[in-house]
Length: 253
Image: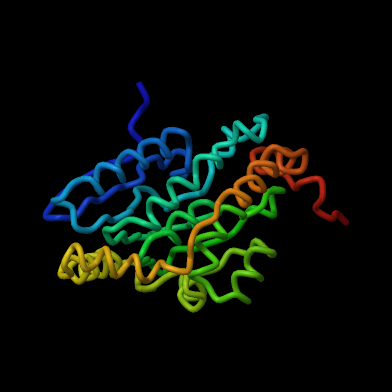
């Protein structure tokens, strides 16, 4: 039996899905992807649920794909192949989805929150598109990050892989509300109340209107992501990351 890595609580119209795998920094492992996909399906099918909240235990919101599962796999076997369905479910959800970010988000973890409607981040939250530094490409998550973020900023941050703070994320459009760490819970609660005050069908139609013109075409992006994860460069980057050493392409003195 697969261990639970996601805690689900439904209360007063709110389904809170809490990433609960701190040992691997809430990475998007096979188990996490499957359990999150099922929990979202259940929440969207439950008429009593009005708002969905993504939260997390531990210090890290989500570190992206589980690189231990990506090592040695062919392109067709990479976990990134399943990721578009998860992002599309969040993006097209007829119910508002809110992300509560209380710590670092990297790579696919940034994509996860970017697919939500409202992102609340604490001051200690940090973000980064780390893909190029391990020899892969942020292709799939670009589908949800680019519509949210200012073009010149996402261009720079995806190329450099630099870590950036919540204030920068808010300026770029990735984060909606950047608040003090001890204000995250109250801010999330206030946003949930505001979202739940809307009529369900009106909210769903409003979201459909707002998402029109930003259709998610994952097919070419997915092929690129999977190919780079399985490539020699990607496998070297993944190995270097896991072994805590510079990758072979990093200039040395």
